Amino acid sequence: MSFPWAQEYTPSHPFMKWVDEKLPIPRLVYNAVGGGYEVPRNLNYMWNFGFLAGLCLIIQIVTGIVMAMHYAANTAVAFDTIEQTVRDVNWGWLMRYAHANGASAFFVVIYIHIFRGFFYGSYKAPREMVWLLGVVIFLLMMATAFMGYVLPWGQMSFWGAKVITGLFGAIPFVGEPLQQWLLGGFAPDNAALNRFFSLHYLLPFVILGVVILHIWALHIPGSSNPTGVEVKSSSDTVPFYPYFVAKDGWFIGVFAILFSIMVFYLPNTLGHPDNYIPANPMSTPAHIVPEWYFWPFYAILRAFTQDFFFIPAKLMGVLAMFGAILVWFFLPWLDKSPVRSGNYRPLYKKFFLFGLIPAMAVLFYCGGAPAEEPYVMLSQLASLYYFAHFLIIIPIVSAIEKPLPLPYSITESVLGADEGSQLRPAHGATEAVHGDAAVNGA
Amino acid sequence: MAETEGVRRRDFINIAAVSAAGVAGVGIVIPLVSQMSASADVLAASSTEVDISAIQPGQAIKAIFRKQPVFVRNLTPKEIEEANAVDASSLRDPQTLAERTKEGKENWLITMGVCTHLGCVPLGAGEGEVKGEFGGYFCPCHGSSYDTAARIRKGPAPTNLEVPEYAFTSDTVVKIG
Image (cartoon, rainbow over all chains, first blue to last red; front, side, top):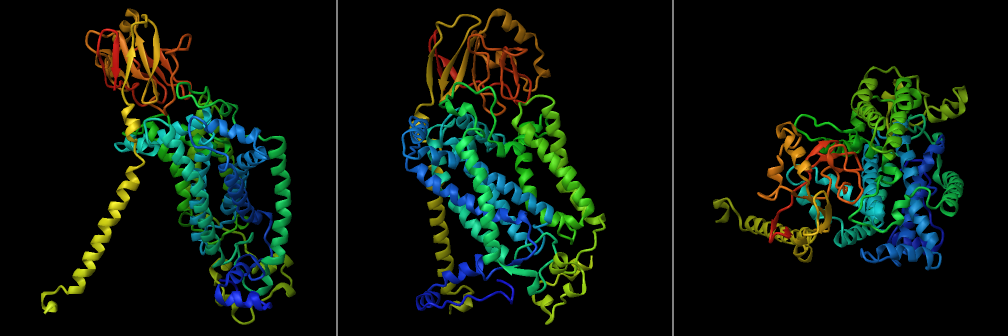
């Protein structure tokens, strides 16, 4: 699953030779994240976020397992066990705040990772499966984060659970029974808290499994790169180890500094004070907001205030919110342009930078704001653009746009188009790799 | 001999085995899915009795029914008049006050304290809480306003506050559920 010039794993120690014959796990690791994986030489810092997302998942699993050692999923004591973890358990405060802020860090990283994909066309052939699995991971992350936020059983936990499960109640006919089935009762209570804990512990491992598939699918065509031109020859790539292990390692250092600032100095900044009030089913907080990473989608949910023919506004909001993510599944087929990178697509780049990004920013802001004017109208306009961007603008732009001339190869894009950089493949390696002549001819 | 009949012994075994496995699979899935529904103890707690003798006209209390708030409100004659003055057919969820209360007990408005939009607890039942511009209930989450018959008048909620099943077991006791 790599290029013909990739280094082969050659164990020298007799023990490693013995292992390689019986169960070649070291070989697998070497070919996946070692010297055996060849990556384009021109990757910029946007390509560090995948590795970083993996690190975030590990942080969440490790701190989460520790948290579970001190937590009890019972409505009578859940709130207290979290406080006890923070106050009384040795280093419990660190585990709790690393876990809570780790979720935020994970979403920061994943949003950058996703928008990197939007800009550089990472979702396009031959990497559609990588993209589809990525969207699945994102959906699983959202479910996991939502259920995790319910566990401390504070006011925001309770009312978040009530509002989000209430969304399923909007589905005609089956909605109400479905909601009661999800909650195991008529309102969030012990049954709901217990199953959320069970699933919150399970889903990260499901995510881990899908991440492995995501990387597997990625390593079949190999990593994309900022030019979007496919790898042609050995001069286009460098081995993952040591080059990108070193670069990712450096970037982890940068991430660790920012993450530490949050955990040690601003541990509650991204949380809500209301969640330090134990859950009270009889009293709703004045302003229910989800965690910041759900704001754009929450804004889309609330943007629908009018019934649409026979569909009630509430159901429209729910459909739109889920549709906002499901539309990503169709992106590889909505965008027909053979040119991947936004750097060579002047029109697409404009719509990305001055359309999608501002629309997301508006949705993000409005999702955290109260449901009143002007935020409702702004959410409506931004939601309209959001869907138009994927369903109308991208297909039209990809049909009418005249892309800029692409470099012949990755090497040429790095070294310039002089004689020496024109490394025409010597042995017909183009066909041996991925003949993307159509792309380069564009 | 089996070949002439078109069905071989092996085909029969194959279909029988796959069918048995399918039935067994369904048999395994049913309990796994069903265990998530409300358990017997949750269902057992699904009715509640409320003493309403102390509620004066214009007052309301919040009772608990199925772990959710229920508003029991003693309407004033003015509030009843206001509710009856509205043309029900002009409403989003057309219902008259009479349809939402028991005969001869029009002043007792008993509804779930759960906004039909996304499930928040509306304000208006507690002492000194805002009642919204229609004098009934007001949901602070997304601004749904209910009138004195707890009917939706403004905001995103699709339907009126739900009237649970209830019955007067005596003049002063209501059994909800």
